[in-house]
Amino acid sequence: MKYKRILLKLSGEALMGERQYGIDPTRLAEYADEIKKVQERGVEIAIVIGGGNIFRGVAGASNGMDRVQGDYMGMLATVINGMALQGALEDKGMKTRLQTALKMESIAEPYIKRRADRHLEKGRIVIFGAGTGNPYFTTDTAAVLRGVEINADVILKGTRVDGVYTADPEKDPSATKFNYISFEDVLKKGLNVMDTTAFTLSQENKLPIVIFDMNKEGNLLKICEGQNVGTEVNI
Ligand code: UDP
Image 1 (cartoon, rainbow, N blue to C red):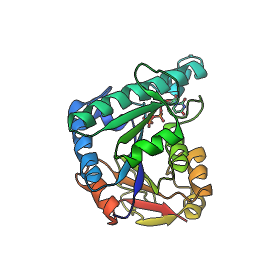
Image 2 (tube, rainbow, N blue to C red):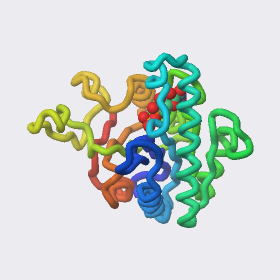
Image 3 (cartoon, rainbow, N blue to C red):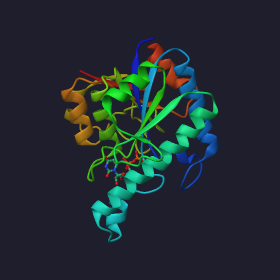
């Protein structure tokens, strides 16, 4: 396998499936199947999940809510998603641990890097909930931060698009996909891979990012095997 330890980032919106809000159990089960294929090959898997299917702090703030209050609500939303994913993974026989950046000891362990390492070494899937634990950050930033902390080999960002394009493929039919692009070129060309904080953290720590379509069966496994799927952002 190309990667020994991965940090998989899933957006909250991806969990909605065809719905407008919340969690689609079918989608959740599909993701669990995809993750299982990789786990069975011995890859160590950590997951950061977003909360956009339930609540986003920015959306709250645009409706007059205090931003910090909204962001904490967003972080709680990621814990709900994390618990849902944990349930789906365990349903398929995988061993998991949920660790949260905000303490909620009845349902999850607090985030402890050394403990996360140990779980991963033992083949447990570790889900990191509550983002970074700080308002004004995103779960993309949480993904890169945790990825750097646990020495992941790569950030795999599963989205609904299959990579990074020269332009928005929905607006510009002539847009083409990059198989590989350097961090520097992403910045030079003004392309959107992750928010700036997340992107810079990844670049500074030379942690590659692969953007890929998580909804296409087999993609996650192919990437871990070293096949060219999606777009790899690297030094
Ligand atoms: N959030 C936060 N700090 C973090 C991570 C997330 O405040 O470290 C909040 C923020 O309000 C964000 C929400 O949680 O809008 C959900 O996360 P995100 O928008 O990144 O989820 P995604 O877009 O991946 O579904």
